[in-house]
Length: 148
Image (tube, rainbow, N blue to C red; front, side):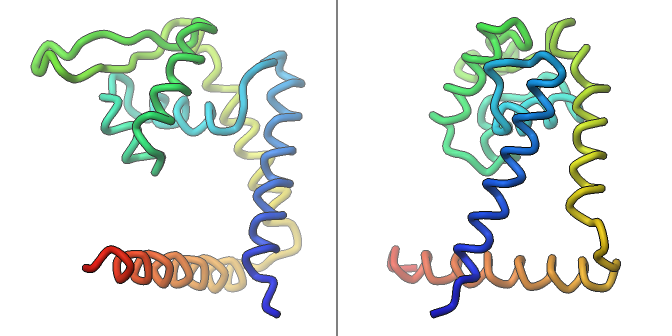
């Protein structure tokens, strides 16, 4: 039996454990790696709609809403209605949230260093291409199941 998906799952679990430990070292208790996904997008472009955030982090909008509510409760983000579309909610970093950016960049740098240790650029490129193909395979199969 092929254990590729199992290995991917275990790798993601280890990466999340690494991220959680680093966030705790920074004193960021209560945050989880998926909060980092949201914050990372806002560091790149502050003031995104919930819909854009959900698309960018590839998560269900209801999941993003839950993550944003937790970040707002911790004082890292705030939300407001879009001035252009009263139905849309915009997510903005607070001063406290913006202050996390340097720490998150360090964590990301450290994670990449650990992840890539002893692996050549050609190996990484081949891995990324293979993972992209596996993702497309699942996307294509999922579409077939929906009658597309």
